[in-house]
Length: 321
Image (tube, rainbow, N blue to C red; front, side, top):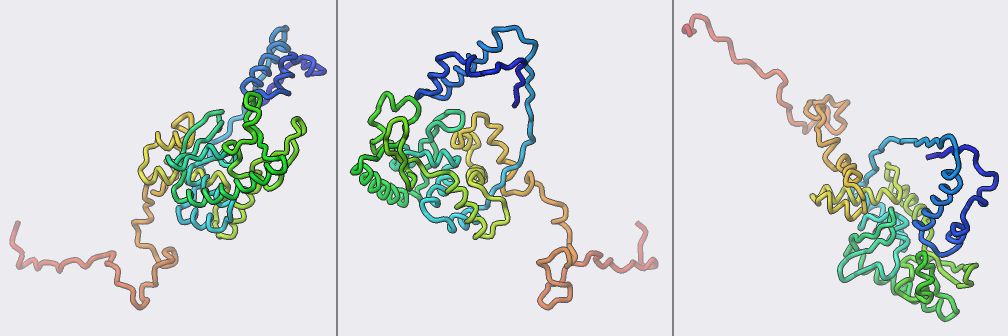
């Protein structure tokens, strides 16, 4: 979308209300920032007489998602090493988006209930999805390694993580607590310039993206595979196994079921479940590459295309009907 507002201010920051600048610099939720921005636009452009505001919205077409078969997913995951393999396993096993998987904290994994809580997903919504039982043991082992690193960080005065929005103001010490630690922390620490805290961020998304692309090449997959392909495959495979589309919608976090219904077009039943008419033909060998030539040894004789007609009845012997 692009907006052309007539007669824009020479120095836009002068038109911003003071509270808007405070919100930008302070620990404020994005929704609050958006409201401040809208207020600034109203103050600058809607309180004075302007002719028009032109809004042009570009609409794109809908694309069918790329989906891997279950064998292809297994082959792909076999070529990824931990911890990237664990992230990719959660993307496929729980239908997570890439950043949703990387932003998981220790408290978001519920091994007892087999659930993953996704915080502030797309649309700033929380949801619960599946914690795959097949990954539970590896995840526990991974968390044990993360905890050892966390305890070592505490000994040198580090161990801090970034907290969501204004929560750090309400609970300033939570950023050093174990439940708030990242499930997939980065290998390096950084110093936050505002607080002076030595923190760890979560793994960068490019680490997983590169690992998935490299694994697809090693596995020899002919499809264009991205991290989001694993989420597409999760939804499609659940529908193929007969799960209700409303359940899949909730697991994916879709607001509208029509978004989920796009996966019904790529189910493992051919295009829209229709059989091609060519499959009913007896193809010549040059088209049916898996069929041996007609005179090849071991080939069973095919039924005749023109079956032999019965002998003509002698007119002298025929009785009138």
